[in-house]
Image (tube, rainbow, N blue to C red; front, side, top):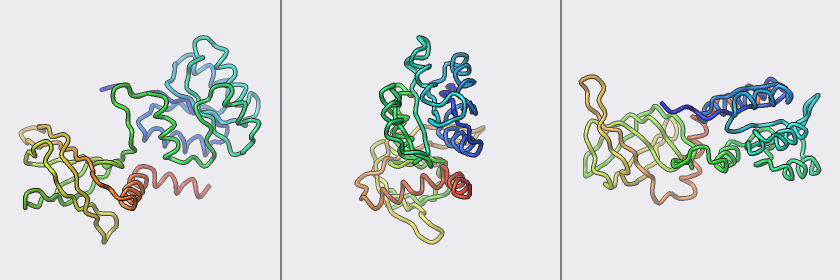
Length: 243
């Protein structure tokens, strides 16, 4: 199993620190939460993380001082740092950008903006995760050459879906999927099979099938993105709204 990239989350707010830790863990990071910049610098020197999120305003050493210390440290100088703040202080933002931070995100953090910012850090060489993905764990109806299959889904992304079938489908074959978008509504989406590999679980053989959505309308993409976000961090968003 490949090791997950390491993220250090630095924020003096316990609630926000736990919230962002949860979000990054769901985005496949091993997360090290820290409540102050001084300790964060030591942890960065010990662990060599792949990315750091840093609150700008903190007691003691603030985020800008910590970012400056990172850039002045030969071993940490290239470390990707995302600055986060509740305050839209243009002067502080300019200072952070001049010190080479990757981006400055407002609280509450927008998931899509965070994801796009992470992509700029090239943490997955050769296999960049261009789109958000979430465990779906529902059944969809798949239509292929007049046959209807009721299929369990493993993962849903903004541009495709991964499922398990008892029958093999040829790569490149076009299929239609009835995707449940609510308790009483489905949406039909089509696309080609881009991956089909045999999998064995004991004596049972199944096929892992990846399908890429094609010709999505803006409305369909909006609905799918909403579903992915709901299943990825819907509960975390509700918790943050209650804080």
